[in-house]
Image 1 (cartoon, rainbow, N blue to C red):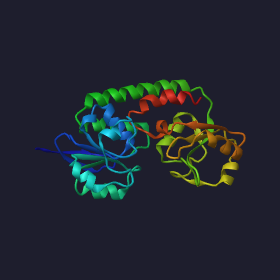
Image 2 (cartoon, rainbow, N blue to C red; image 1 turned 180 degrees about the horizontal axis):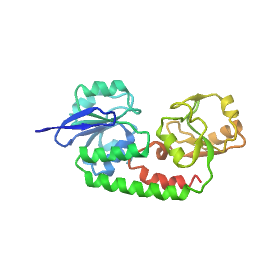
Image 3 (cartoon, rainbow, N blue to C red; image 1 turned 60 degrees about the vertical axis):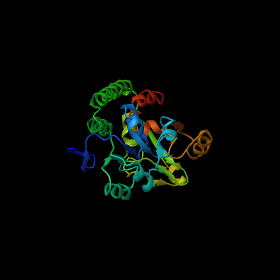
Length: 263
């Protein structure tokens, strides 16, 4: 069978033989994307965090988490390709798997990156028509949201992903990109990735309009609203759906309708 070469989002060359038919996905949002592209029957392995659709973990082999995987289970599945992400999976996992299997790595900071990934999967798995349709639908939803938000006032916000220690989303994250799209000014935009913050630092924040508590990876819930409100009495504290802020595949289709509810 002829060898084919694809370039992933880290500019790595991925060599495969024909269109991959046995897929292991180590990224929850990318598992959901594969299903949206009509590739569910070709998925053979997923992580324990691949929760959409809720039946997927019962139907496919669970090969571990996103940071800790069972290499023996993956080998037993004889995958044609393994799908990873630079942030979700470790460099060690990618390098070890790449010694034995073709590995495609995504790297997502913007919606443009997400749409590029969808197009890459369209080419990689020979589902270009489905990929193009999904991209067009997401672009349409994005434009409608931009029209909706353009006259909304800018708001100063902080977006927390973790508690004890408190960790916020900052620059060089997909979350920060979507905050900007919402005309939310991230007070930690000048910092990198996911900085830790003390309670005192949170209390000292000035002119803060909203504190957003994500549903993942830390499961913030109603009981945390009052705790956070005590740290900053003047800000509106909201629970937000973390999947809409950090899942960059087909979940984007519903993200913009959800974002409207935050305004």
